[in-house]
Image 1 (cartoon, helix red, strand yellow):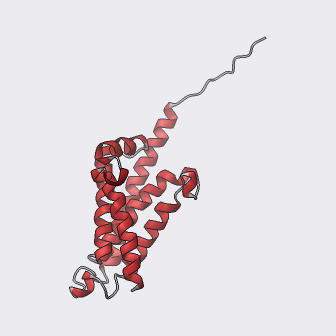
Image 2 (cartoon, one colour; image 1 turned 180 degrees about the vertical axis):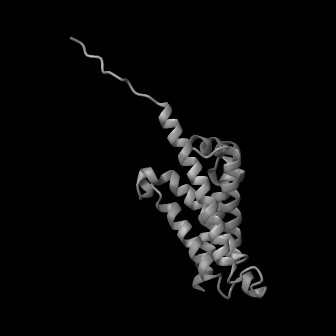
Image 3 (cartoon, rainbow, N blue to C red; image 1 turned 90 degrees about the horizontal axis):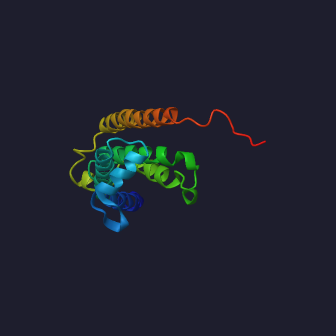
Length: 176
C-alpha cells in the first residue's frame, strides 16, 4: 500500500507538471511558452527541449502512477528532474528561493521507485513483470544518466559561452 501511495503521489505530481509544459494545463505555458523559457535557461532548441521534458514528466508520471514499465518510467522522470535541478541549482536548495528542492525530491522519489519496483498493487505485477525485469533497472537508469549528463553538459557549455561574450567596463570613469 505504501508503494501505491508513493507511486500515485509522485506520478500524479509529475504528470501534472508535464501537462503544464505540453498542453498549458494547470496554469502552464504550453510548448511555446515553455520552449521560450527552456531556450532562455540554455536548453536549445527550446521547443524540442520542452517537448522532451514534458513527455518524460507526463509520460513517466502516468506510468509511475499505474505501476507500468516502472524502471523506464522512473528513470525518465528522474532524468527530467535532474535537468530541472540544474536550472534551479544557482538559487540554492529551498524552493521558496527558487532552489532545486522540489525537482530533486521528485527525481529522487522517481529513481527510488525505479529501483524498488512498483509493488503488488500495480500493472507491472498484474502483467507478470514483463516490463519490469531486473536487468531493466540498471539499463534504464544508466541510459538516462548518460543522456542527462550530455544534455546538461551542453546546456552548461552554452551558458559559459554566453558569459564569455559578455564584457564589463575595462576602466571605471572617475570624475575629478
